[in-house]
Image 1 (cartoon, one colour):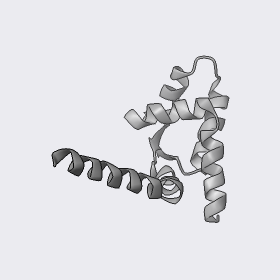
Image 2 (spheres, one colour):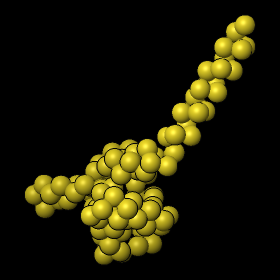
Image 3 (cartoon, helix red, strand yellow):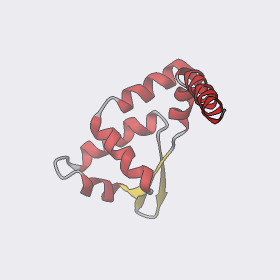
Image 4 (cartoon, rainbow, N blue to C red):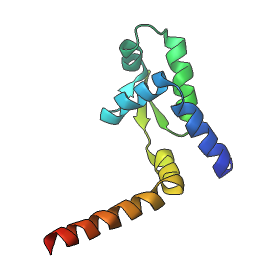
Length: 107
């Protein structure tokens, strides 16, 4: 998968509010699929699994089977790659601006 294809998959995954909600939960701690299903009573298990599949394809969720349970772990690296490609250059300028402002205020 090329870098552009990988980024397309990440943007697609992040384009749905329910998938972002799943990632918000997984940021706090890994969860089993059953625990995730409980957080979305308006969705059936199959739909939650489909959302997890999109997140997994994008590399944002790493599943691990333990016995009968599937644990889902948040992987922030694909988002970090997008940040580095599109945002970090601009963030560096903001940090430099704040450093100059601090120096000016201290004079």
